[in-house]
Image (cartoon, rainbow over all chains, first blue to last red; front, side, top):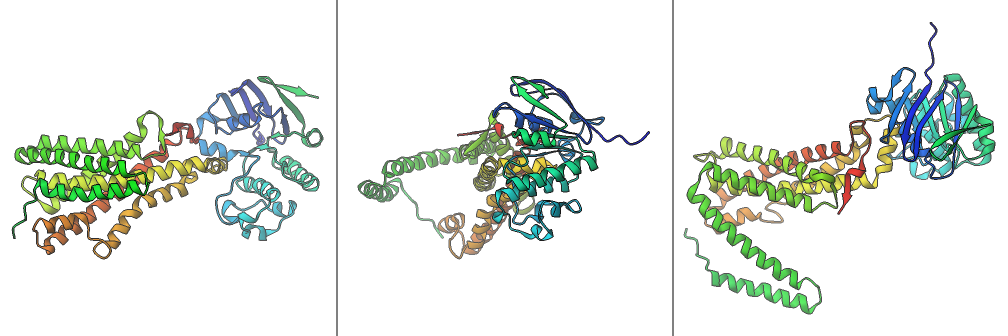
Length: 202
Length: 265
């Protein structure tokens, strides 16, 4: 039997106001999630990454969230928050080996690894946070507004790179976005949070 | 060498100087005049009381009374650790962690010192055991209180960073590692500084007392060195144990950060 790339399966997850969320994100697929602010998008992502107590079960392929140690799960199902955090002096201290060619694809070169974190702009931080997450070789991605601090050109660059990468590496991706144009460009499916559940959008 | 007897009316003379300071503080509107007097009165009452207790304890000298005294001292010190925290754990965990680490380090080091090094007969002779334990607890308490306060406050302030590190797949121990090391250091630094300054900048209180009470300085110095070493060891291990236990308590079984287990006081 050929190797099956794992999909991300969310079964009856309840967190905050959200109740019994069911969602399958297939390998290599980008599913966008939108909703008013405060509707619980970020909390849902946090629950899927197991950073917040929640009901229900989450699977990555045949591996269940509750059956593995918390840090292992989060290493596979990686959440990239809207506001990235940096704790060391230089960029390199936060990184494992970046994916080949990924720095260049987002407009950096290797010298960026020696940069001081304190001198990064918010846009640079956001792109580097994505690269940093992918340097840990996750098997699924949870992106919380990954282009919120980027200008139009960087946004397009980042979208294209992510789309290619996701298809090439067969990653299931849950992507929180606001901009309808962006959702049309990147998503195979789009759900909107309505009340306590998700509603499929055309 | 005979010790000059100190009478209560001589102490009353000394207290006049405190009153003079309180009057000056009041006139200068420092706002501490009242506190100063109250604290002075507490000193007199508490020490007089402990003097009575010690007299009784020394005359009896039974193991179970010494043990009771030691436990009471540990509990009071544990309460003091809790009182010095800006943020405490819900459900008495701060008191529990503080008291238990203090108990482990202070008791082990004190008993080792008594049995292996000083060797009074019997080993729990209260003249040795109680002052030694008292000094251990006093210093260990400071170290643990500082370390815990530093840990919980830093985690609270940097909770976004700690969670950011968890999101990258780090274990709870990696995610809180920097903060934990810093907390352990800050608990141990005062006692390291005290050792470095001993005899040069300050004459340690215990040695001064012993010399005033008629001991030859050479013997007082040896006891002071012994006490310095033991309180350093007790403070160090106590702080490490308390910070380790408290940092674990900040995460749950899924290695999630649980700052909701803290409440600010």
